[in-house]
Image (tube, rainbow, N blue to C red):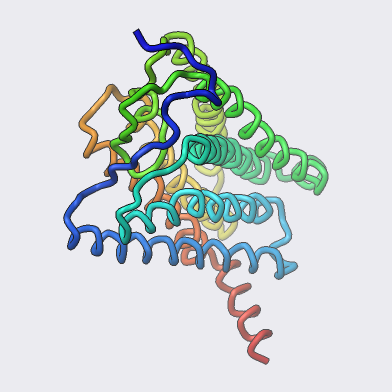
Length: 311
């Protein structure tokens, strides 16, 4: 029977991230591919964040939340990609115990915050379309700041409970994580101590951070679609449909992969890695691409910013 140890006395001092493949050619190919994804996601979200901050015409609640989402995704990719890219080019695939816990904490906190921010964006669209006369009064600058702050604080505080439970578990070996970053399920498989209570607590907390915002988002869009369908077709209605469809694409991709990863019963580790790649890479590319290419206001602001800097 494994000896129970305190967190700072655990027998496992580091974990080995097995990643995708041991083939040198595959490792180089994956490095180039993921580096490209990382640079595109980083550049796209940075450009979108700068544009929203610099252009006064975009200083509205919707773009305020979009700027928060872009900053969150910059942090999200930077938490996972540098370590993963380094592992492709070197034989050192290890990560310290504290580093693994920190990566897992940031991954969970940022994921929870994104769920809340997406629900805030849907609430903003609900007020703008269903209650336009009250919109300016309700979604004031102070209210936007409070909603954004509540999303960030809730995501990091709620996930803190999970990381405290996780770090108190006993890890007495083996220390090989069959994944490319420190995620919940692969880590839990390595624990030697009883995880029954921890699973119950983590399920409740993750449901609070994911299912509740998801339901709020869906309810908001039911009211939005109902309001749009009951209106005569106008330019304003078409613009509302375009904006909401962009948001719905991001929400569907984000929650779709999230449900497959954490709600659907256990599946093969290779499939889990592929889904994780889609969750942590592809969905992060959607935000700058969709909100830039499908949004006339952002494209107009980008042109103005480019011409102003060129001049």
